[in-house]
Image (cartoon, rainbow, N blue to C red; front, side, top):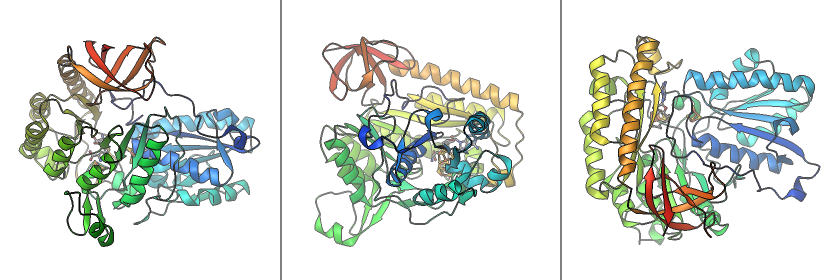
Length: 484
Ligand code: SAH
Ligand code: SF4
Ligand code: F3S
């Protein structure tokens, strides 16, 4: 359930099994209007849908897992690549058919595509009644009311402050074990290929007390893993002098501000049985402090998603990533020095960025050889209107060349994933069980510390437990073993 699937393999956060929502009290839901919400794109969008569900619940809507049963359908959309948008357009065609059968049905577009296209969406897609950008979710009940009265409703204002800190998300499609917790919104980085700064607005951090409270509450309700989410978690920053002077025990903090390392530590201290993950780390910002914090706490996962995008310093400069190949390699070396070879590392790679030569493509492959990533999300460059790259550099790599380079990147990654998984054979891994395996009811599946999917025979074990599993076999995507 993370990035767009088409050109992605080995998604570490793909749930093996997704249970249907049990989160709503069934009695409350009786006779209520129904909301169906479908999420596309990154984990942040999935977390946002849970905020939207909470806002709509306050307005008297229960959620349903069936689109046909819904009074309101929201698509929480992604604009990161053209194919992400095409997928939503395609889905809207299907919803047009549904609306013909049920004319009172309301259809809303939320998220990044809403923000990018604004009222243009209403002109282009007649089936759409509501358009709401990522900072407008508190306003959604009003927009629904407007739409119910027959008007089209739009709110795409971006905010510098909104973090929805006070809203308790309704956990949709929850396995009851792992949950997403948003710690910041927006992005100030302006990578030249990327639409996110335009669709999500300026970067802002959420207050740490509400983050810790949310994580504590999840733990109290039986959840055993939280993933702290932001486009660039290493630039998390919270200024609050009062709180800082009251608690001098954590060391990853200056007098008046809390860094990401400090936040990570606070969440890790909730309970040793609460696993903490985080995403995404930016190579320019990740600090030794964060790495040492991971090393200090057993419950902070030994896994870092550190997107490189390219292995060529010239391409990285065009991408405006603000680091070069040797800086990136230096960060990998630091990870290995502080956390050892055991730390899982994953990346994002883009093939065929503007003017990328064959040699520069080889640089990406050789960087992959240097790091030997555990996982990767890999994409062909897709020009996004309005971005720096779209304005400055021609999208001049032919589609077939982008695809061929992408295939080479994927093939290389598959080989590395298999190698990286093989070294676990014979090891005992601590697995947090997330549910029954999708392939067999006799097996459980969960994740290791390094975020690897592990499948093993059920025995007497249950969802939500930590189980020590001796790894006996693997593929490039999964480890298999037996509880010991
Ligand atoms: N904040 C994260 C990435 C968020 S977008 C970071 O900085 O790493 C997720 C991934 O989508 C990016 O890492 C990039 O690899 C990919 N991506 C973004 N824009 C793209 C584009 N125009 N074409 C192809 N891939 C893109
Ligand atoms: Fe996009 Fe770059 Fe921000 Fe990531 S850091 S969201 S790639 S602009
Ligand atoms: Fe997509 Fe928006 Fe996330 S563009 S990747 S849903 S921030």
